[in-house]
Image (cartoon, rainbow, N blue to C red; front, side):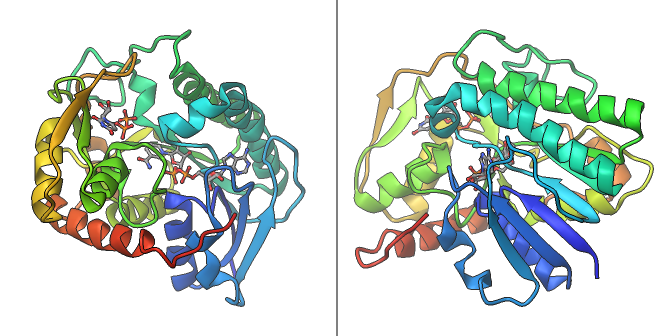
Length: 317
Ligand code: NAD
Ligand code: UDP
């Protein structure tokens, strides 16, 4: 049976990936230091015979025998990755070196969860993989943006120098159940605010755009990517349907049947004005494109947050 390592497996994306791999009858080892992940995301797997959890920080080396590695460990929301910016850089640099070292020793194929943030405040639209990006190297988002850029560099150099079998996935904004309530990302914020009857906090005038991919579509793409031979990427994975943040706020109020209003707050520094993936490469190489409709996905996510916010629900790390 194939043994698959998922770093960051207790996080939002990682926990859904563990579920899908176990459903495909793979042996799964999940590594997490629970910085932004949560045991509740994987508690249902604790008694699964093919699931193993290791509490470990990937900035330290680890010796395991594995066949494939999904390398997702890294805080993803601005609040989390800016909480300890130096640690974010260490996770991306030392953590990725450790995982590449493991891949080299075990000859495991490794997939990096990179990010659309490598494009920064993009000057081209929509973003293609060939665009080199417009990133501030000294700003508040740099620990994450430059961290992901150097993680990609490391992947390519281990591939060129040591023939490590690599895959680079550039993930665009993804949403769905198990996003952390307090992670400050726009969809979790707006849904929590609309359930609590608080104002939805639109940063700036709300004309900035994002495109949101449902987690179920994204996980399918990651699974296809790791099974695709002779293709390292980078490849954009996301939903090309673009929406302004103001429209998103109005949609969530409507779907949650909430009485909340919208209020405006200052736009954070270096907040990209437009973001939308060109996914023609993913369509061609992986035969993949997202299917889930935004309204349907948001409604499901609203139901998840209603349960997660119920007063008798406990959480633990
Ligand atoms: P998340 O914060 O929910 O999950 C990240 C997980 O990694 C958490 O469980 C956290 O505890 C763990 N982790 C962080 N640092 C670690 C370390 N040093 N050692 C061990 N574990 C560590 O975030 P997510 O949304 O699930 O994102 C997963 C990956 O996908 C990240 O690499 C992120 O950069 C990337 N990504 C996500 C999105 C998105 O929209 N969700 C977009 C682009 C890229
Ligand atoms: N945003 C907002 N209100 C919030 C949280 C975020 O208007 O409560 C905006 C944010 O300024 C950005 C967009 O929503 O323009 C997406 O933010 P998020 O942090 O989810 O992701 P990223 O900026 O990394 O795409």
